[in-house]
Each structure stands twice: as structure tokens, then as C-alpha cells.
Amino acid sequence: MPSGTIDRGDGVALAWDKIEGAGPTIVFLPGFRSDMTGDKATGLAAFAASRGQAMLRFDYSGHGASGGDFLDGTIGRWAADALVAIDRLTTGALILVGSSMGGWIGLLTAIARPDRVTALVGIAAAPDFTERLMWESMAPPERERLMRDGVLYVPSQYGTPTPITRRLIEDGRDHLVLNGQIPFAGRVRLLHGQADPDVPWELALTIADRIASDDVAVTLVKDGDHRLSRPSDLALLYRTVGALLDETGE
Image (tube, rainbow, N blue to C red; front, side, top):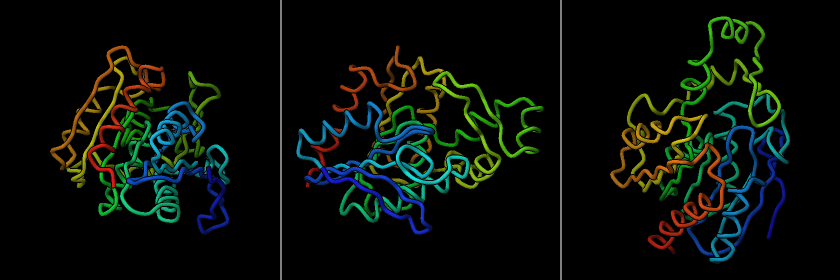
């Protein structure tokens, strides 16, 4: 199983792990402060290997085994990281699987590479979260502190406080996708837990409404949380990706 790093062009190394196999290539896009070693990423890699399917995992800059400072990261920067990894490490058709923020990165990637992306799977996809879920939830004093200091540390149930930077918020506004039609005509499958405390499940319906494609299906898991990484959740993910592969295997 090949793995390594690639220089994205400015001295920052992006870590990656690849499975050689049949196309289309599955590309896993992690979430905010997550990486390619999580349960969904590694489980999907094992699923791909069992099918002889090509798959690429990687870490955005400032995440996991990649170089760079997390505080320098923005949606635009991480979306560019995804394109670097995809363009340099894969060929042919792609099925993108994006978790949380990865769903936003996946939509931006699909827009940027419409000739290559044939399908997109979102797991608690969170496009526009910097505006809808971060900025809009901040009290005026928090907004003032963020704009003044350049960073705001917000408590997180997943570990250390989450740093939200001014550049993350401002750059996010340049990459919003839900303020109009999303020009993607491929197949879209959205999986979302209705017990998700971080990203409202109704957002999946908004995404479905905004995407130009008519081949869009939303699956709601009533007791599912944000991570959707229980064995039953992973089984749903594998069935979803497997069905897309069965329809488009090269």
C-alpha cells in the first residue's frame, strides 16, 4: 500500500496513503481537525481493498501527518490541498467521500473538476459551516474578540478547545456554496444523523435542494451522531459507496 508525502508547491508536505486498484478512485476528505486515520477513513480503505478498488486518503495541511500550521489553514487552502493531492496522485474518474467539512471540500472539488468527479458522498456534510455554524452562533463579544485578536478558542466536546481564526471566517465567505445553485450534475448521496449535535440534519436537505443534479438521495439515521462511525453507520457507508461503484465501475 503506497504512502508518502508530496510538496504542495510552497514547502508544505501533504501526507497521503493510496490503494492501487480498479477505478473509479474513492477519495476520502476528512473533517475539520480530523485526519486520514479515523474510523471512517480506515474502514473505507479496508472496504476498498476488499473490492480491489483504488482509493486515496490524505491529510490537509495542519492536520494529521501533514506539515503546516493549523492556524494558517482556511477552506480555500484546504480545498487547494485536495486538488493538489487528487491531481498528482490519481487519474480517471473519482468518487468523493467527504465527512463534515470534507463535504464542503468535496463540493468545491466537484465544481473545480466536473470532468473527473462522478459522484459525491457526504457524511454529515457541513458546507458553509464557518458562516452558518460558527459566525452566526457567536455572541457579539465573541465576534469582537475574534476580529480583534485574530483567533477565538471555543470549547469542544472532542478534546482541546477549537481555534477559530479570523482568516478562516473571512476566507470561508469567499467559498460559500449554499447561496445559490451548486453546479454539479453527478450523483450525490447524503448521510446524516438526526441526533447530530454539531451540524443540523436539515442542512442535508438544503444541500440536496441546491445541487443541480437530480440524482440526489438523503439518508437520515434517527439515532446517529455527528461522527456516524458506529459499526451500523460504517455498514451504511459501505453499502452507499458500493452501490455507486457497482453502477460506475470501469
